[in-house]
Image (cartoon, rainbow, N blue to C red; front, side, top):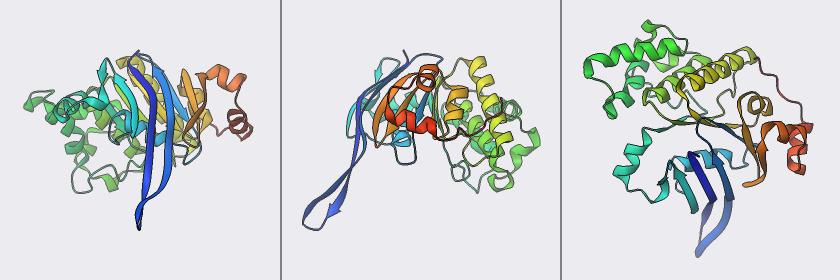
Length: 260
């Protein structure tokens, strides 16, 4: 087991005029584990809490309460210097790949940043490592000099994957990695992720509203509804014999196609 999540909770409180305002519970009591090398899916409609959980796993968002363990470390109790060191091993590919990049810096500089920040390679080797990563995700070496706006949505998603891999992580959260991409590009991105996971032994948490993506990519998954886990288990069982009415309702919707 690499990741252990217990009773994770996130509550937002609206400011009140004369005291505490109304509460909004984004995540309520989420518990699950993710094994080494496993792909674990978080499925749910918009607003179900899946992205909130993904960000709390990396402590990009502070939980209200709960427990997150990564490879034996209590993530939520770590001081900032310890957390920064651990973050090399825990990366995320954001849903909006366009806004995740600085428009004023070349993509090569941005892919190189994790290598420099964590001191992963000698300075003279970084350019070659960036080119190697770009080629790995299906981009050309000369594209390292370009800027984010010069790339398509699918290419920016590849860049997001390259930047995450630059840190040499063990664990990657993928937030809607195929959202807003056409079907053929979705298939290419998922095939790339499978290939990279097999080569590097990565552990993945894949967040998606698209059940076909989860079915294609994941070993196990949890179904979220209004911030709570309605059901979790092996993907074959979830889709083949769902126990929860929420899961059955999701399955009743048309599965979006994904190319293998």
